[in-house]
Amino acid sequence: RKGLESCSSPDCKFSVYFHATPFCRVGILKISQFSVTPYSIPFVKPLQTSEKTYIHREGVWLQLQWEDYTGVGEAAPLEGFSQENVKEVHYALEGFHQAIDGESFDSDDLLSLVNIHTEGIPSARFALETAVFDLLAQEEKKPLALYLNPDAPTEIAVNGISGIHMPGDGFKVIKVKVGFRNLFDEIEHLVMLTQSFGKDILFRLDVNGAFDLPQAIRFCKEMEAFNIDYIEQPLPAEELVDLAELSYHTEIPIAVDESLTDYSSAEKIIENQATDVFVIKPMISGGFTESKKIINLAKEENIRIVITSSLETNIGRMACLHLAAANEITEACGLSTGALLNEDTTSPVIENGLIQIPDIPGVGLEL
Image (cartoon, rainbow, N blue to C red; front, side, top):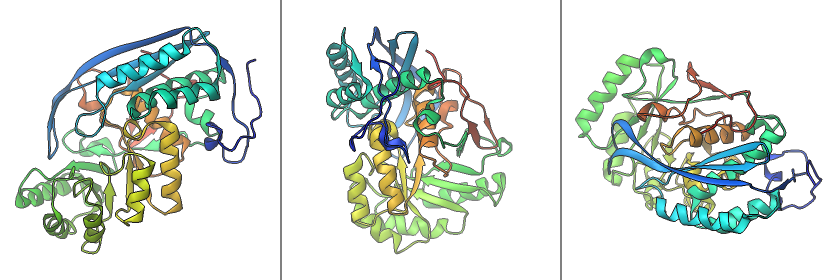
């Protein structure tokens, strides 16, 4: 039975995205083709964080075929951030494939199987949720964001990246990797960026957990002279008490990234009053459903919300874009990372720091 059905279940997987309506969308799906394509793409130049230098990006692209529709997704665990690896992703996807092969499911049951077979493998869950939602949105002939939320905005603000994007590119917010220079070089670097981009540009400083508390306090004191939007993960992921302590020593808002991996970690961060900003990576947190739970929690606690990629290819970034729009995120999101990769599928044009949601059913991409 195809089409729409009413659903009164409070646990409905779909109802989390529909603000005022209790129904969910339930169609009968039989996946006729399931394909997984590994990729390995070099970065344009090695990408340096405080802990590691990345030479290439690897992961898998997923395609699901249902009738005339093809849904796509991406699973790309990132070493140093993700708990799983690509081999575990393959095992999870193959287990899901065997469970659905030759069978028909309503969409709610299909998503339940996704959860079962991707427990502890959030990047695989992100890929499968993206592909399933892509199929259902195509059936309704709506962009994925508007399928999930009819009130979703049609454009999302994004930040630029220091070293990649130029002053003339029109970004209002620029992300800067810090924590691997000495303090005097960091100050000189921010002086140079301010002179280049202008005093009205906001800078987001990404430390990747490189400081201890005394270093972070000193660094933040020096950075208060600049136009700083927030400092991201200044301390190691587990140092929530020290993150809370840091907030008493600086006016700069503190964002968490590596500390935030799932809903449980979000609760712990809030319990410790350790942040002003949640930087949510759907590839890390486990896709649409888990990210939505974290977003709702953040909104309840008046915590700012930024959705960002995990340096994946355009399929993963487009899924993040639709997720950000479906949740009506107003902060500039970290979705301009396609320029870091040597090859990629076609990306939407970024104009003046804004990405338009393509008026194409589903995710809007093909492999």
